[in-house]
Amino acid sequence: MTLTKLNIEQLIELCKSSNQSAQLEVYNRYYKAMYNTSLRIVKDSYDAEDIMQDSFLLAFTKLDTLKDVKTFGAWLKRIVINNSIYHYKKNSKYANVPLDDVLYKVEENNDGIDSDFEFTNLKAQQVIQTMKTLKENYQICLTLHLIEGYDHEEICDIMNISHANCRTMISRAKDSLRQKLELVV
Image (cartoon, rainbow, N blue to C red; front, side):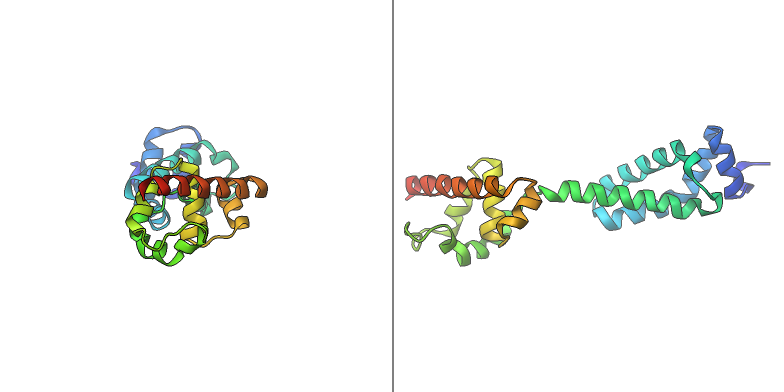
């Protein structure tokens, strides 16, 4: 009897004994659905494919923890979803905000840096270009605080830093930006 005619319970039993042909058959039956599930979460086809393949590898190594073979599809989908969410959070947590896309927000929020320095004649593009020259963590915290409008507690959670460290970093980033902008003007 060929593997394509076996039901999933029989295939899983063969997979538990490391039968690679059975693993390939299981993969062929489920990979499209698992890829689409991951793609809906991570929104990148290459990442979705990697996550899907990693999830199959994990599932094949953890088959002994599967309590009911009949629930294999749901169990595998849960693994894919968990891996996709983890990947999405990991990559979006520190994702750089495209500053060119939020140009209008800089113009609205330029008084948030400090009112003692005159920014009225400074073009938003100069601010963006100058922000790009700051250290990466300064760019991130200023973008989150001034452009995206996050408060200190939210920035602490996003950047995984203490409240004191957050306040210090924002203050130093503002000072650094101010100094660099003074050189531009």
